Image 1 (cartoon, rainbow, N blue to C red):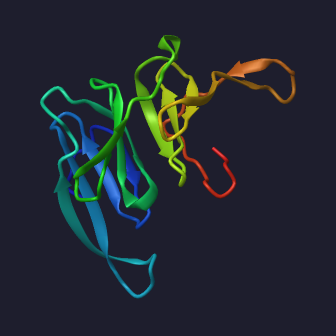
Image 2: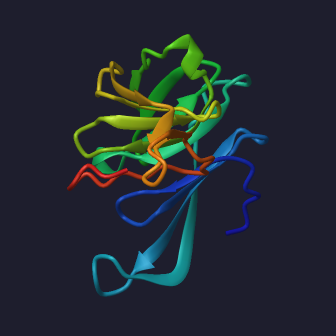
Length: 168
C-alpha cells in the first residue's frame, strides 16, 4: 500500500483497512474498488489520509472497526477512546474506567456491534467495557483444561470479537 506500518491497523466492516503510523502521526484508509458483489474488491486500491491524531503528543496504541463503519482509536496520552467517522471526523469519546493495576497501555481493541469493547493491555490483562466505559469483566488468567490450575493470558497481537455469539 506504500505506507510504512509503525502502529496498529484494523479492517472496517466494508473491507477497508485502516493503518496508523504513530511515528509520522498519520493514518491511512485503503479501499478497493467494488467489483460485482458487496464483499469482493478488485486490485485497484484507493488511499485516503484521515486525521485521527489530536495533536503532536497524541499516541494511538490500538485501533478497531466499530459499529456503523466508524474508527475507534485508543490514545494513551489522553487515556480515552475516540470514535471517528470513516472520513476522520470526531464523533464521540469514551474514558474507560481502568483499574490502575490493569495498566494504561492497551495494545489491542475490538468492538462489539452493540458498542461494548474489549481492551487487551501490555500488562497481559484483558477487560470488557460497556459503551459508557464501565468495566463488565476483567481477566488476567485462564484455567488450564488439563491441570486445573490457572495460566496467565498468552501474549497476543490482537483480540477479535464475534458480535453474533459473543466469542473473543
